[in-house]
Length: 113
Length: 117
Image (cartoon, rainbow over all chains, first blue to last red; front, side, top):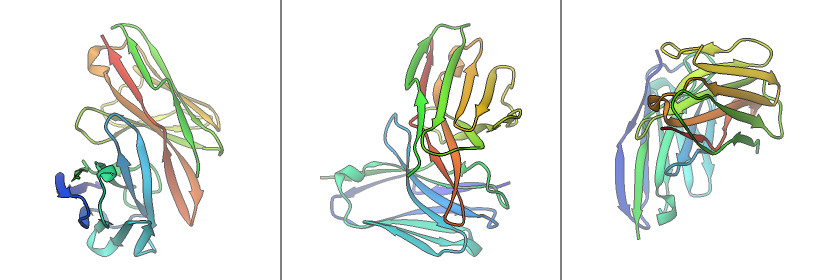
């Protein structure tokens, strides 16, 4: 059964710092991995999708890496801004499936001005 | 990118009544939609998988007679919470799957906040 773990659960950094969020999953037979952002009381905003054949994806100040064999992904945020404050969720499909997503509990990020 | 809408965004209902939530894919056809539930400070948990033209598949512990799902078209799935109770108060989010880039990406609606009084 696929399980997703995110570390740390919460992170507080001063504005301008670079930071890394971690995600691990137990079943490495995944088709892809997605990183989402969720603002309080809001829905999900898709940040990056990494297909299983890819090792990383970049969008602006965000870079996500995927090491499928070790069951790990990282989300790197460069030059953090107060507007980056949100909960970041990592999600993968069940192993060997392209069905629903299984989510980690998220990392709550606070970037202080 | 693909857009998924949900309606209503927020609903308050009395215990014992039923509430219908709509999920629409606006610019693509989705043969499969998913319904998730998120309790405060928890992550999203899958409730059911909705397939167009067939019965939904429910996750273990989710009552199919309480959470009625209808996927009548390729762009619309509905979730009806019947005989709602305060413990059903939660954030309900749908997603639709669309092909692209060699695999499938899921696009999420903005969510519906249900409060049962």
